[in-house]
Image (cartoon, rainbow, N blue to C red; front, side, top):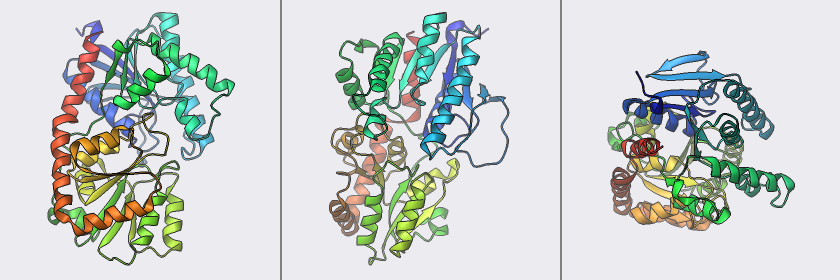
Length: 408
């Protein structure tokens, strides 16, 4: 019989088979915790990023994980009102299910949707149910930075007070890096820092690995063999510095050897395509999300991969795509500010360059430099994989989660 302390319930809007990074990471975490002897239940929504028309059951056992998909809206996530409705409907469904349930599983609650952790606080108050708070994004700070909320509004003041109580009542708090920890310490100086643990995101070292371009079917299929490929792969959002990449492509459009490749989807894709078309940028190529099993091929097609963050978001979130890039053994070009995990890792690993958001001239300069110095680029790629294997493999990171849970 499974011991009570080995039971864990994960609350996340995204889970298998969703393509959202949060869903993929938590699915891998659950799989690994199963191997440690845990009984895992997941309360999630029906897939929204997943493009397959296959219908998924309300209840399913996947690799030993008990998955329960609650009712939630599936409006356009690229529209703020649609995303908010999806958040709220999922939150309401999960709240009804747990508030009237007799189970007292230890809960792992993700910070997104932003009001989901409030449920953990309520369950702690009402049922003395314990929860671990996994901070992927710091709210309401991100909403303020993106212009959705005013810093001194009554909503923000109330939200901050509630957030402090959520953090205080959590058994453990997990953050994604040193800068995120600093943000929380700065914001809540009275918080018990002994229960805050830093665990970075990861990539699966067995599924994402370097592949030589001359040995890649993906490179051959998309005619990338004789190109220096500047890759952006992932969510093409509205609040990322992607226009700088397009403007750099415009400056370099007369060099047929350099190609800017975008792989993914999102609210910003339509505008990027429009700009590329209006400026006749034949050096820009767009591809849809690739299958997870093909990630090694698509990521390794790059010569250098780009990670972006909106200015001011540093320390409030960490782009998970960074770890896949490192795993694929490719150099990293970070369009980010100085004080963030991406910048720190690039400098420490010696695996690429950091450029301020919006600095198109510097971006073009660095691309020209790597074009003229292929050996530097190759060395950076090797450094990426070595640093990844030392610090950010799936097996290392999920073991850290296991160690946190075992202490409770």
